[in-house]
Length: 79
Image 1: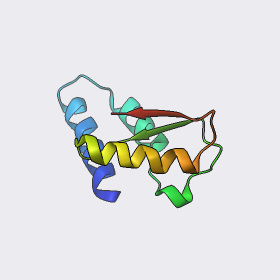
Image 2 (image 1 turned 180 degrees about the horizontal axis):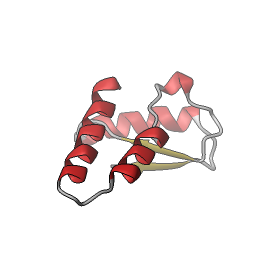
Image 3 (image 1 turned 45 degrees about the horizontal axis):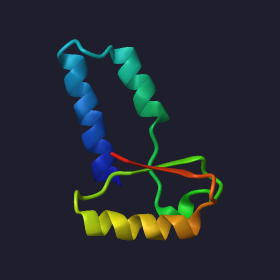
Image 4 (image 1 turned 30 degrees about the horizontal axis):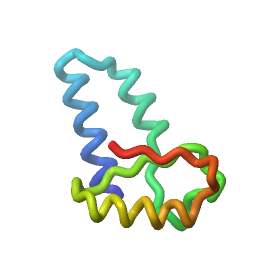
């Protein structure tokens, strides 16, 4: 998860360098973004966004696992 978070932060830093994102906004976004493993996530989460390998079978298996963990009200999204 640290590698993924670092990659996202790096992408935002690049946007700052290109003038497409302000330093303050990038700092704010970095402060708000968190990552967690499934066992750390509240079962009552309203929204879950997955960001795993682009393999349909892997994604289908993940969503089956997620459905068993969260409530019927949880919205699942894929990047």
